[in-house]
Image (cartoon, rainbow, N blue to C red):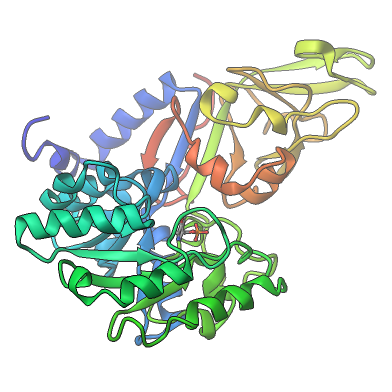
Length: 402
Ligand SMILES: *Cc1c(COP(=O)(O)O)cnc(C)c1O
């Protein structure tokens, strides 16, 4: 791509842009709208919630939960966010390009033999085992520069992190610690999404038992759910992910975070089927009344979960058509989904109209739960094939015959 070409869009007249989008719309069966403004607004809401004494970082791993890493971090940086958590050094390098001054932590730690890559992009590994601590210390010694890193302490999740005992041993080795600069000590909650679970307090207590061992080093415990557990969990830095993208945090959302993603698919055709007709593969669902079905141009090949389909035994997810919740009917195919529009006025359910599969009117969390998964997985599987549009979710859809 030519230098500066990503800015070409800004020089196009609005009418050219609209024409270009309509042409693309006509060629795509589904459209994914991502509102990075909502992501930035959600970050600001969380930042206000934790107060100015606490750093509010942003977790942008897995392509910013499927929303697009580069546009997401640009929006977050404009809103004032300067600390980012990614999973991999490769993601970190993208954040570095977009936000040259950012502080970037790599949650999967120090990948073996990759220290030079971290140094080059000024990425801070979240050191998660003694082997990683040693490798970073040796690398920094050989370069004769004390590069920043975080230390991950496991307080009961048994995934990544040194044990509390190992953390004590590290703290007792000032010569080794002096080879790099410890800029954060963190841990991760296993049950944050269940506020009543006593394990949250237990993990916090274990983490706090290290207080004083690493003087002056900021501490972090809270992901999105941890932010909602209360100020005890905020410590010096919070690192929300899912809440930024409008995923569900708690059943009662006290902050009114905004949805940031909308998936819509076009109606290819509307068909009338009699009672007693099987629909789709396996005839998994049979009509029990004369039924009007809208056939949508999207399917599991676009990242919509097949498990959210419907059968005679188990209802599936719902979609949204101009003010009406419409149930999925039968199994989901690779490229097609059927929805029951019998109860929707005929002028709304027509060829070319858009149906919202999730977004402001159809809660992503409910769709995820119909598919027996979580919104995190819906998000990270977003749109391999949909037309991707960045802008407000309320934008008017191009509708009508095509
Ligand atoms: C993914 C992740 C986060 C962000 O979690 P959310 O639940 O999306 O807010 C924070 N910390 C760690 C260690 C993570 O792996």
